Amino acid sequence: MTNSTSTTEAPIRVRIAPSPTGDPHVGTAYIGLINYLYARQRNGKFVLRIEDTDRARFVATSEQEIFNSLRWLGLTWDEGPDLGGPYGPYRQSERTEIYREHVELLLTNGTAYRSFETPEELEALRQRQIAAKLPPRYDGAHRELSQAQIDAYLAEGRAYTVRLKVPAGDPAFTEFRDELRGVIRFEHSNVDDQVLMKSDGFPTYHLANVVDDHLMRITDVIRAEEWISSTPKHVLLYKAFGWEIPRFWHMPLLRNLDKSKISKRKNPVSLIYYRQAGFLPEAMINFLGLMGGGMPAPTTESTLAQPAAKQSETDIFTLPDMVARFDVKNIRLGGPVFDLTKLKWLNGEYIRALTPESFYAALRETILSDAYLQQIAPLVQTRIETLGEFGNLTHFLFADDIMPPAEVFVPKKSTPEETLAFAAEQLTVLEATDWTHEALEPALKKLGEEKQWSVKENFMLLRAILTGSTMSPPLLESMVVFGKSRTLDRVRRFLETQKKLAQTKK
RNA sequence: GGCGUCAUGGUGUAACUGGUUAACACGCCGCCCUCUCAAGGCGGAGAGUACGGGUUCGAUCCCCGUUGACGCUACCA
Image (cartoon, rainbow, N blue to C red; front, side, top):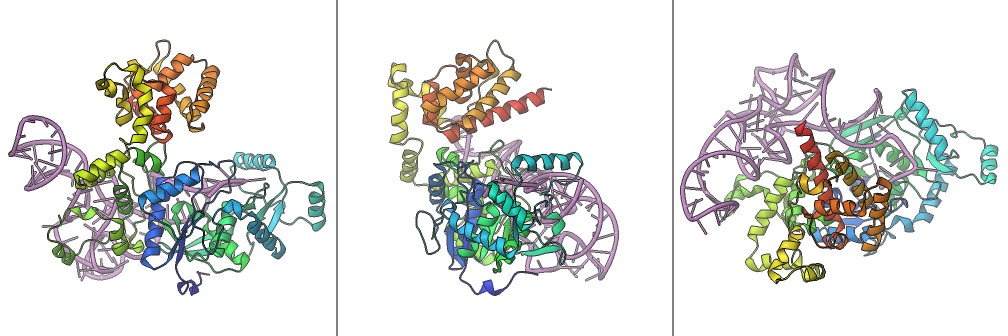
């Protein structure tokens, strides 16, 4: 029932499989780091695979940003969409034919079946189950359709999904070994007949993931803990195909300060944000290495071997240090809080350790780059009388603690509650909008019309949040220059802070 | 609700996987240095290891239960 051990012989191959659905996420970097270390320590290969099977959430620029962010952190991969490799293509949207063939296999060997319900019907079923206080699950209505019925539906041209036929009867459970936790068992009555192929012909994560991991010879699946619950489905799939099962390592989930799964509302999660806000990649990777432990305690010998090193600085290490000393098996299973305070301290340590030359270079590459200043200059040229006033108008682009007082952001005709509610709407719109002047302007104006906020007050509110002031360079241009990640984060931080403020007043 | 996972100061971790006054770092407080602020130095408060039972000469570490937190419960990943 436990995994085959023959994978031990195979050359180690691991992978990360991010979805291009938005900004690259710190969680991706964390899992990427662990995979990277695992591969580098074992002479293995680290594969990057893009899981772009969700066409509804697909973001065109996302893939490139994932590449950039991982490279920024130094997490280089051996095979991937941009590098190629022996088991490509490494983009799932280019592998649809492979999935189709494999689904056919399952259909013929009876481990999967077609399900012809419409999304509406399934939603209705769900609602009925929830109302009846039953666990919402597919009822298996089409598990045993007759061939005649299937042919009839097919002839009608009815859309269908393909579902996994979770075995009934003996054994009535699936077990697998998590390398950090031991054997985990799921009763089949608790495993849903998961959709493997959507009606649009794209596979779901579960199918694509298993097929690709097998075809790409992945020996160790190192992923986040949120996948534990779906692992039995994956194991069942490996078995349905008659394939060897890889080792599973489920890493703890990064958390917000309140211990919930890390989320953009409560914490910056975009790697682009961290880069643009001036975090050094060495600090970020070091900090991620601290999450969950994994670095052995310093031995007496090693401290003696480096008498010059400050003993207190055992929290400070580089990526090569980690390759040399990190051990996945030492990972702590409690979800670590991604604590910005400590990350900032670490970043400060790295900044102080820079030579004056490289510190200057770091500034010139980021916050004081020519590219950035060239974008800013036209925004202020007509608005200043001496060059010395440059800072007066652009302070908000270089500061990280902007927080307008209520007098500034609440319009005369509105209450603070209305204002904050509208700001939340603005955030939602901004999140879904391309970061260009042409796209932002109509999107914001449309929202203003719907909610009956004048253009002036609409824009003024955002201006206040972004700049902390009612006077600034043009809003949209400023937002474009400041960047989507940082702007959105500033709005989120504003909303969260105001929410807390309102609560403490009560 | 069901299923699963987890549990050491406020936070991140350590403690030869049964024997320590439970250690280090961040944060916090104080002192020193200092034109300020940092940095740096020195010192301090803060957990008896979620709780309750076992096993053991002895449990942070092993077993059981409870509680809590978190995750999953989609034609999203």
